Length: 124
Image 1 (tube, one colour):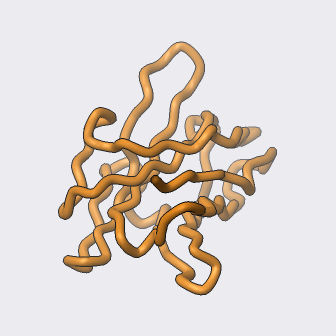
Image 2 (image 1 turned 180 degrees about the vertical axis):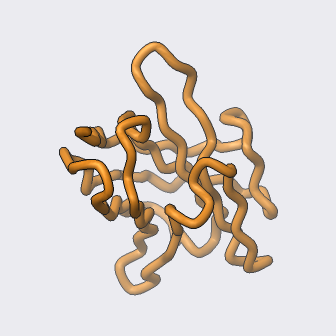
């Protein structure tokens, strides 16, 4: 089964950008739909964006529309989350997750594989 490891988190000023990586092993990332979620302190984990490469569609919530994009590097077996125009309310632990569903869902229980998370902090 696929294992996922996120990286790329850190501290950034409001308006800045970060690119998170989700490196996969034990499976080919292109075989899955991959999503990104985040969990802020005291809040539930929430869906942000997901891509199903088999149907070539991207799904996202309004709060990240126009700011976050998801992409893939097959050679590195890695999925990326490019985050632009970051806001303090984007501060959270960010998780990538994979599912065999295509198109992918937006619920946590629709994803069977999760990374450990990476912290993103946006200062005002």
